[in-house]
Image (cartoon, rainbow, N blue to C red; front, side):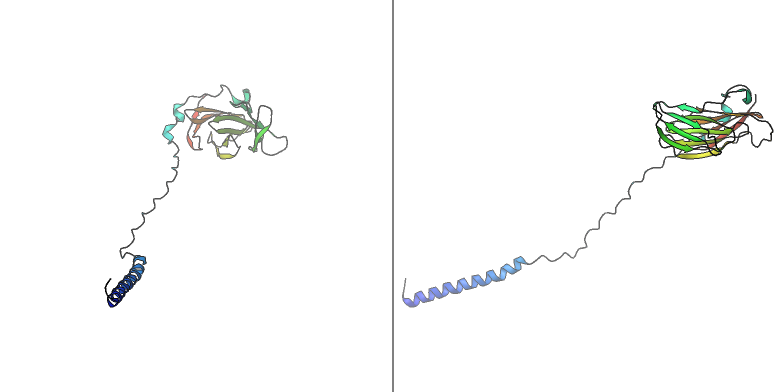
Length: 227
């Protein structure tokens, strides 16, 4: 092992080496634990959000999609209106329900009701307020169409109702014969669905007419019909 002096030098050298190693470790560890510096490059931009798709509005069919009054023949009852029975004020639906048109005894509007096969009421809506009223009823899809008129006066009003809820969707007067002066008069109105259109057949003392409406409430065409 050598002399004592030699052993002292070896031990001192080993301690010095261990001390330097410990110092180096203390210097290196903090450097390794430092957080990385933020990059100087700009962060990539987020992609622009695309607008949410909007529901397309359904465009009603053009007038050309429906038959015109000139193309249609008279399909109402033959004869003078005063000689004909009034159209029924009740309509039976495919599911067995019925639509009833009630004329109130007291002054005021008529009542339109949908009832089930057992007579239970589904809904009730107000009709027109006519003197000696008449009515024609028809359905197309999920809508009810009601033509109301005075049986001793000219003209009529066509209205549309939601068949499920009874809500009134629109109401329009028919052009018909126009203003008519009279002292004694008869009026009878019928409805039909032809080519997807609602067709009004008006038979009055002063003449006959047919008028074509789109299901969404547009009067498309009209013409007078000779007897």
